[in-house]
Image (cartoon, rainbow, N blue to C red; front, side, top):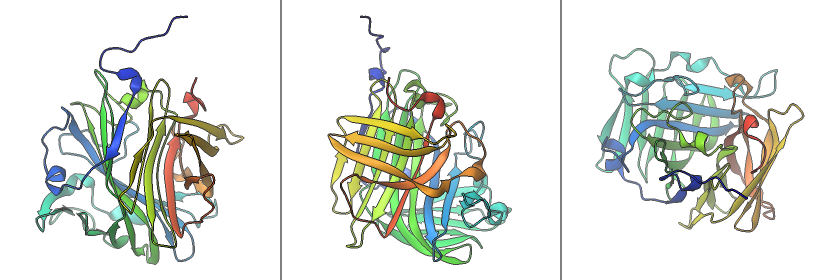
Length: 336
């Protein structure tokens, strides 16, 4: 039996994952990390309003010299999809159309231990301002969203190396509440950054997820009635690729040593009806939200879908939850 060996530097698509500390200086710096450059920062997450309707918010902020929304990459605009429409699933909202373009948003130091993103004075579009720190978070998109919150667990990171393609992904998670499209809403928002080789662009070029033939990528968070939170990232693909890193509000961090995942496809073969994971011998499941298909984003090779992530034997129902992720139908439903 012949086993195909991986090239030097790929480690058969094995990944590293762990917790990390918040460092405002790091978020302000453009110095390379692991020889990689910042591809973009991503503000995104899911909230529910007082009527139980879902809203998923996303904005990509790329460095001026980086590619701006080419291929499958997000455009340099604020995007919101929500339920509450006749179609029943998540559809694009019109309200963000007047928001500032991300190319007019700059980073600034703030209060010695925080980072402030803000649209430039006089820039076209409505004002945007976001403050990130381990003790403070606020996010304003004028006339669209105005929320504040707190970081609920240690920041996380995962790293997939490769000889030509590589990806360092860092993330932070805040529990937020405030106004969204005129309604009281509560949920989770993430600030994440992708670091890639020069010229790399997530989903487009020099992306090692393609080399790993990834099947699914989910980020999730749960708040329980006792005030405890848990957040994580689950990714899975071919070869040795997997990431199963999660943290809770007590500061405990876990990273999967072994992992398996099986995707159950919906009848159309495009959306999924659930994902079952086994992580270090513990069974987990991603249950799709009945209205969680992001149809408003159009037909994509990696359909985006909202749900809830939990251990199979955990019978608690969170008071606030989200699990936003994707599957890749063309890549299959399990490891070969």
